[in-house]
Length: 74
Image (cartoon, rainbow, N blue to C red; front, side, top):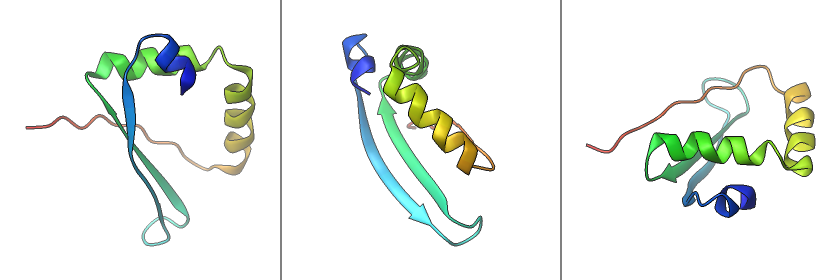
């Protein structure tokens, strides 16, 4: 996510986990952003990086579903 940092978006990977309980072979990433709009800006910045596009293309062939959600601190 260096493209996101170059775009001025501060973020941090909080959790990278794997689960074989429930949906089989589930990979979970939890990223911390100051606000939801920063997450969107990070995704937009990453789309301009060829290595990232190639990675997503490969993962898409191997993946049945993708889910995204926002969690807000209370």
